[in-house]
Amino acid sequence: MVSAAIVVVIYGMQMAKVILVPFLIAVFLALITVRPMLWLQEKRVPAILAALVIVSVIMLILGMVGTILGTSIAEFTAALPAYQARLDTIVDGAVKFIAENVRGDESIESLGDMIDPGWAMGLAATLLNSLKDVLTNTFLIVFTMIFILLEASSGQTKFEAAFGRSERSMDGPRVFLQNLGRYLGIKTVVSIATGLCAGVLTWSFGVDFPLLWAMLAFLLNYVPTIGSIIAAVPAVLLALVQLGPGEAGATAIGFVGINIIFGNFLEPRLMGYGVGISPLIVFVGLVFWGWVFGPVGMLLSVPLTMTLKLALESDERTRWVAVLLGSERDAVHELERMASEDAAEADQATSSSS
Image: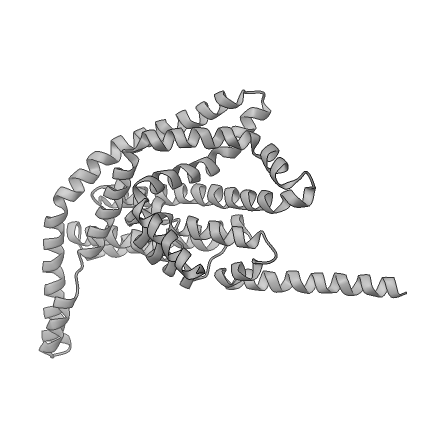
């Protein structure tokens, strides 16, 4: 029965993705902006006015980004077949050179038929066009955001009425929402910095459409490890087609440096423990949510999986599932937490017996 219910729910989400995807985007935007709104309320700004200010800023940003990127996406999509044809020529030439001069084995030429170097560029265009299509439904996103932000100011009162006034009854929902908002907030700031660096990098080398590669790096930074690779490949391939192997190699090194600085050093220090996801779960989530919600689901895959992990982590009965979904660092931290609790219980038992 449970398996059948899960299948029905998944099928229902897939059928309702036209409505669910804008709603999910609105939820994540609301979680990111709820703290600034509550800060405005602490400064005695009325709730409706604070929500309108936050939403107006988001609308302004989305409008500017949409206007700038809309033209670039259209131009890139129109030029994509020419880029892919030139890239195919380069790859075929490289395969023939290897077959004739390096290996001396013509059978390697068949490898060129199995490689589709333009696939990464096509995937980038598909992701950006899908996001543009979703953002055209700005009306639904904006109004959903407004109502969510307005509910945030009265959420604690409703939780107390529903689950009781005891502090312990509020711990689970409060910890879950705080961790999720913190994760999305930090991830968004790091993603913005990553996108800006990627845009400056491609612009400095003269790669076409640097704004697109900045936006792609920003969006795919929400997908750990895999996202940075997917974001870098189209820009590197375009640099190869447009500028040559030297500039392409330099662009690749630049993307690697950006990923190391933000992904391996800055972000872990800001995030701390308890927010990692196993690389296997990242890949499975990417495939699953992409299948359910389409290309935009791939961009939302890690926030959705992270939401599930934090929800499971907030309840002691399901915490073990969250540990299995998490990274090795989270498992080590959980073992340290359990060891400290065991030591505290042992000290308490010793003191009570004495």
